Image (cartoon, rainbow, N blue to C red; front, side, top):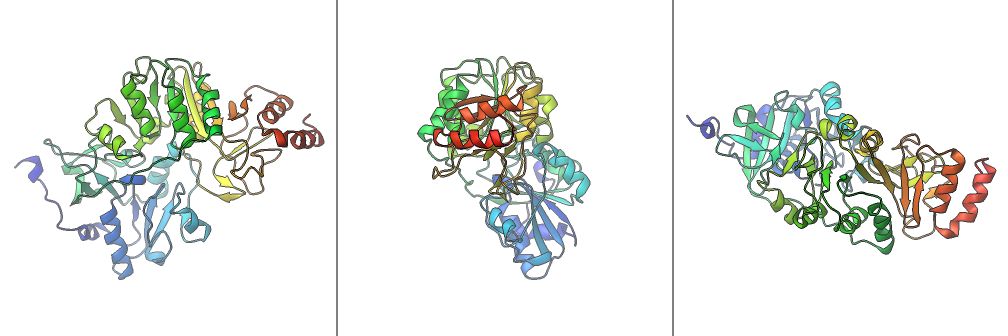
Length: 430
């Protein structure tokens, strides 16, 4: 019997119900790693009273769901590890839960703080050797291969990717087949301020550096600003469309990387169809588990590592509140602290924290004397290296509180500098 004949797909997603027990902890990948039809079937079963006491553990959900909105009660409750536009309002309304974490530690948290009863994941079709690929995901679920049973939604449109996100048909409890487009993420266009921030960062990154950069207007502007760099490497938690441009232009080739030369390394991908087509059967891209990709000890082995992350508010000490807005939860820590620490230890490493100097309406400064009440500190003052706004770069590492305050006020919006200076003097910082 061939490997493909070891097990046949279930006729529909209700096949997953045979593998559920009361009180089970279900682990679901983030973003497009979610097996939509499988979760639909479980939600329907919960609504009908066929299952009870289940919890879904997931970062950054993209699909609105009854379980996220708390409509299924304790029969099926959502536990988030990073809020998205879908889960954010539900969390603030008390309809779902949030676990604080560093992204690098999520696999360990899931293994030690949940039952990890069953992993539910989207996958690419099986290859000729009987292996499925987890496609756009590796993240916190790949470390569970061999440690927990998997039930897959095999999507004909999921790219087959390489790295450490494959599992053999003999390791799968069951699967169902679908043919569904992946969700695409089209980042907003960059503003003049975004391009200025990108320019300040790009001019400080040398040829041959290895990059960690996210998704959004500022990251895309930064990647555009680096089109004339040479021999860049990529070691990032999130792979987006902007990297594709640099690979195709020959800017990113990884020749100077020490740990994974010639490879683009990531733990998940989110972007447009162009990115997904670029990923399909592309051996130059490796998806690896987040507890390796985001491990500061691994990051620190790459010389000239440059970490670029966004924040929402920075105080005079350099504390960065990147996951709360006006003291209310907005997202979570993600991998910001992981990469900031890794860059700090890397030979020639640099950690950039980027933000526009004001809120979108220009009414408030995002450089502040003290963080807003209720704010969570994402990146510690002792770790922060460089804070970048459209007005320049504030060097913080190794600086006194007086120098930090002076440098941060210099990159604040001009209309707020006098007020910030007066506050700093009242606090005894100047």
